[in-house]
Amino acid sequence: MLKKFIGYYKPYKKLFFLDIFAASTASACDLIYPLLSRVAVNNYIPNRDLNGIINLAMILFGIYIIKFLCNYFMNYWGHVVGVRMQGDMRKDIYKKLQNFPIKFFDNTQTGSIMSRIVNDLQEVSELAHHGPEDLLISIIMILGSFFLLLNINVPLTLIIFSIVPIAIWFTINRKNKMGEAFFETRKKIGDINATLQNSITGIRVSKAFVNKEEELEKFKKNNIEFKTARESAYKVMAEYVSGMTFFIDLLDYFVLIFGAIFVYKGQINFGDFLAYLLYIRIFSQPIKKLVNFVEQYQNGMSGFKRFVELIDEDTEKDSPNAKELLNVKGEINFSNVFFSHDKKNILKDFSLKIESGKTLALVGPSGGGKTTICNLIPRFYDIDSGSLTIDGTDIYNIKLDSLRKNIGIVQQDPFLFTGTIRENLIIGKADATDDEIFEAAKKANIHDFILSLPEGYESEVGERGVKLSGGQKQRIAICRIFLKNPPILILDEATSALDNITEQLIQESLDELSKNRTTIVVAHRLSTIKNADTIVVLNDIGIVETGTHSELIDKKGFYYNLHLGILQ
Image (tube, rainbow, N blue to C red; front, top):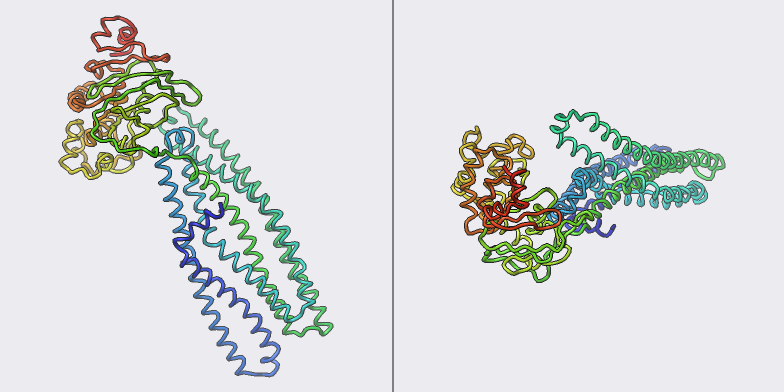
């Protein structure tokens, strides 16, 4: 996992190494100050050497200018490296999301995914910037202070630094516990985001059913779990930070007590004693940075771990021999297909042939597999066994993008993206001209309505199309299909949200669009399916009846009873 993390530095290695150089230079500048102070106290001040003091002042000022420039570089360009890495990670995960199978989204809450992409990667960005800097500065400052102090007085240095191994042991001992605590916190943040996203999206339903108390209870439960996890994480962190602060205080204590004893015995002078005091002050800073680094590392790597879990998810893949679907006639053949979802058998040894250029309607009670059949054709789900072909070619030997480009789908609950009407219309044909858009909108009987809006085709639809009525959203979804103009159409309750008058207005256009195309229609309304070439009646055991509308009515069987009871 660490190797993957380091890999994101590669595009920015020049900036990264410059940042490391700046951090090293700034650390070296800090190490020089106690040495110059020692020289001033031991030589220049007792000897009243004004020139020496002036030279020292100029050197020290120059060092501070260098340190200022280094700190500016680290705080600006160092953060830029972290932000760019975060951007790359977010781009990678978003690209990967586009290729996740529908089943993944069925089983994963949107808020949890958003938490991984936004919250977790923010912590990863901070680690990417501050982590290497803090670690390098700490190593330089600790080792530099140690060797410089050895040159002043070996026994005193060894006494003071005897506490360091204990501090290191303490750090290692608490590291794993902190990692577990922060990882659990990340999961709880994802749960809260998922609850919030679900509650906000369904706010109208919640208000309509006066369900706010139940929603508050759900949030309260997740919030308590998050607080508990966060409190546990802070408890571990408090043990770690307070322990390290205690070790830092012990360093000050050792320097003051043992340094005073060494001065009293004449083993070091006041200048040396001052240098020890200053170096230990400096030495405490890298220890604090190490404390911050460990916390940041646990925070960042727990976030990166969740990022890697997401990036390692299985995606939809083309088979090695997959090819483009060209010159589509649209003959679709299900042969002995078995399909189950969430351990429930939906299709069992299912066979059905849909002739090229014909309209086939699927009707029957809920749970019969009508929508499942529609979802299997564009490979939203994979069949368990059997075969599904288009024009004699198994759909698993067709490139996914090519397969789906040749299929147009209008679902019962159309989804509109936040943006303008135009942006939603051209999803299937980004290069569509105004004339093509207008013509498609007229066929879907939505053009006049769009022109009546103040901004016309540039009008915002709101989140999920909230500014439009159900029928208007449905007609925009139908307009997309007119614009995409695919050889295979799937209309899954495509006119369910339309009133009778509007449905009649666009039914002729739908009939026109269906000519010489393979069309699968899922519907309950008689007006939608009565002209279908073939009607297939399904229930939970499979196909019950097939035939035209008049043939099935004459049989006075399942379809006839269904027609009397449901179709209107």
